Amino acid sequence: MSAIVDLVLGVVTSIGGFVEVGSISTSAQAGSEFGFQLLWAVAAATIMLAMLVEMSGRLAAVGKQSVAGAVRERFGIHFQAVPLVAELVIDVLLLTAEIGGVAIALKLLTGIAFQWWLIPIGLVVWLVLWFSGFAIVEYGIGMLGLVTLAFVVAAWKLGPDTSDLAKGLVPTMADHDITRYAFLAVSIMGATVSPYLVNFYSSGTIEEKMKEQELWVNRTTAYLGTAFGSIVAMGVLVTSAMVLEPRNILVDSYEQAALMFVPTFGRWAIGLFALCLGIGCLGAALEITLNAGYVLAQVFGWEWGANKPRRDAARFTTAFTFILLMALAIGLIGFDPLKLTMICVALTVVAMPFIVLPFLVLMNDKRYVKEHTSGPIGNGFLAALTIFAGFLALIVVPLEIIGGS
Amino acid sequence: MRQLAMALELAAVLLCSGCSRQDARLEAHKKSLESLGATTKVIAEAWLSGDVSGTYTRTALEQTFYLVEQERARLASTPEMLQDRRGATLSQDAEQLSRLIASMIGDVDTANGDAARQRLASLPIVPQEQP
Image (tube, rainbow over all chains, first blue to last red):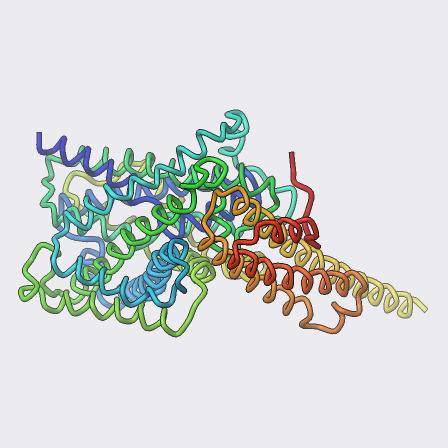
């Protein structure tokens, strides 16, 4: 019974926690510039994420090791240094962007400049992490995040042509701005397959003390949760394509993106968009902050855990506090939240091979996953994904320069 | 003779690629400014129909104003762009759009819907909506 409750909670909170600053901005831009044509990129990124999340959960449930901890142990600190630095840089920048997303949501509601909200939001994030355990961060915010289903409702009410939607799921070449199209396709992948999600999921599996016998819960949560969650990201893309593209509005700011709700929700539109953006970004900000603490503690062998009394995991607490302060410092220097988000997703793509490659070894090492090693399909997928990630990492910077704006 | 022909050919190619790069840049600026003109129109219409609050309208128009100014600065960053007649016209349209948005922010502050409606009719850069 408890496993079924965990499963339902896991799937529901995956839906609520899927959409954040990266997926909202990349999907909104993709929809406004290329209609439904980039739906396939969301679907492809979802498959990648679901498989990586399932593997990281399996590693944690069987080997009782998080991804960062296992990589440190298996490959040593010399290899670990690269993904560690990459992940921390991305985490700090992405955290700044997520806090910026919450601040923009508050700006939409109050008209007060977003910079004024950065410190109060940082304080809320820190207080939530200080006073609550893992369940509040994961399930509480995930449940609130169900408000993002408004994107699916909006897309549904706008009545898109199902054959056009189906066509969007098949990769095709754009008839205009090919480099921009390629850049957005790669950015959608970077926004979806975030390194923090993979390690956060494996750390959460350990926090929740998932047993080896409950691997089916992990598998179902990973696949169903990610699949349903991606429907929300697709909802953003479809709504943007149906409202903003016909009006020739390209998304250069969140103020423009908010307009996509107006035809469906009328006077509730802006409030609802702000709620979706704010809660989605707040949830992600909490997860990223916690994840940065997890990664540092797991790599350096410190005591860690969101459920542990803070004094028992003092270095873990100090680590996530420091990361949060760094993100706030960058935020206060001044930044454009949408541009920073697009830089973060490009950096994620650059780091992707270092995230994917260790899985190929770990998921075939019986010391970590016992008899639950990956089969030919899983290994084939990982090998293909490693090559594909390497290719994306090579092309993303030129694409960012040519097609980024 | 053959070398001269090749040099002329190369010069022609370089000249053409320079022209097409300029054309592509102008097209990109035009597209961005059309998007900002369309954004202004949609925001103002939503405010006039009571779908969005004055707070949001002001915030969104301010952001649009900022983006227009950024685009205008980018457009005027090289003399070649403004030497081109199309670039010069686009720059003037962008300036007009900036002024119009600034006036519209004033209309929102004073809740003057009639003035905003009149300004909406004279938006300088708005593309045709797609069906």
